[in-house]
Length: 122
Length: 111
Image (cartoon, rainbow over all chains, first blue to last red; front, side, top):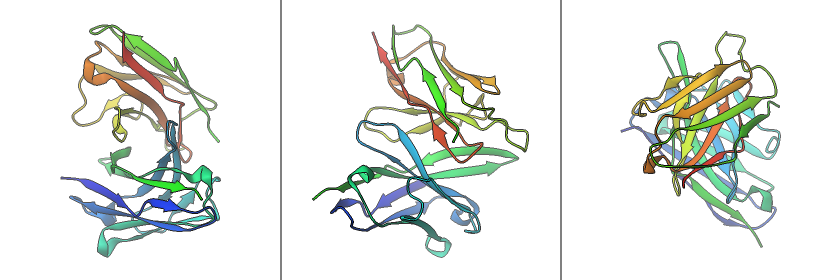
């Protein structure tokens, strides 16, 4: 079964840092690009970052550029998001999301994790 | 940044009746590779989103055929032919032509 499981969320003070992890299983992780998205309580969805399978291509949303860093370890089937300089506006559920490419077809967001909640508060 | 505007934001529907959601983009979603990367996602209460439709009109694996997508360029539509109880939730359009952005979401509920 294809699965993505996020971890590392929790309560952090403003200005603090947190590192999220996403464990992938059920597929060849290195062959897929993955993203981080988030959803603030009661709000819509926001894309944060993208990393290709070989880590050669990395993109960030303007809202997190310079504060968040995405990385992956294909040997460990894991994706990471290092978050620094956190503010109350970063409070959200953070999702790890896979893109797939099969037979010439891109399926963006074909698998989502359950999410991990990050709360930034003093 | 590409802005997606969904209408309506709320859609009360009678069971068994159709529902339609519009998604309009601030610019063409045709990618330089010729494809249009417009997807639709469903988020049931308390659940993460799941992919329903990709590249305008392709149903993802396991998605019932009562869901269909259409459109081109800047105007897209998701249709549910006969709404069932399990369809209650929020529906988002998402573009992946230029990074990713989402519509505001449309809440589908039963009248």
